[in-house]
Length: 254
Image 1: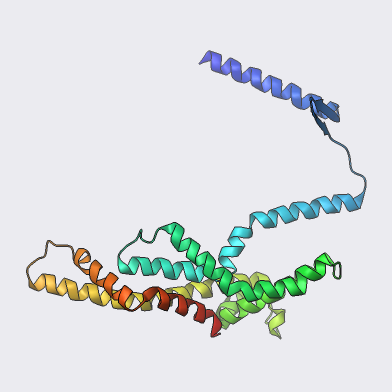
Image 2: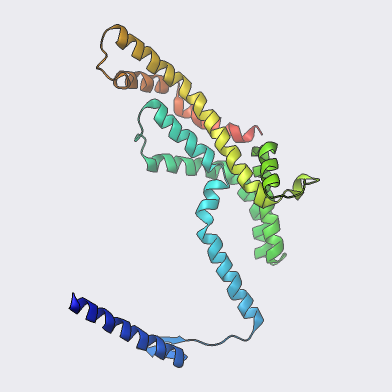
């Protein structure tokens, strides 16, 4: 135990000496490596560094934005509830469910991405607009998509919670209120679709349970008997086609 403490103190001492030398010597060199620390006096370069830091922060939040700001939330919840309704919580595997949800998300959001590229990305790369204008043009298609799927009641809720005035036009709705309103609207729609999917499989479970109870086979799990019938029903009605079609059209009808 004493040896570990001594080793730890030695390591801390070496680190302190190293950091002290770093603070006194603005330029450190090693074989093939040179590290220098210089003060920056030009405001433009400082602003560029801050912008780069903000960009890296946004990129770290990109997965959350992709999940909550697109059609992914509704799709993955419906597919997960379908899996539970059939009675196979691990089939298809999570990788397959998430992969299918991602593919359908890219398919549904493709027109939005195309519009963003035409209005914001390509003009910015051609140096026709600046960075601020590109960001404003890029957020417009996303806001338009969110507004089509969001209930007015949910938008009103977050406007009231944020103590923000009632907007005169749709464009005046702040994104900070639109984003969470879109998320809870998607959750509501996903649970409604999941409930509708549950009904036919629940009927099969009730019928099988009643038959087993009338036959006196109370020790036999009803889910074990109903699972083949639910799989047969799902395959006969071409369930994956119907589910995929319903999910895609649920975004197109708005």
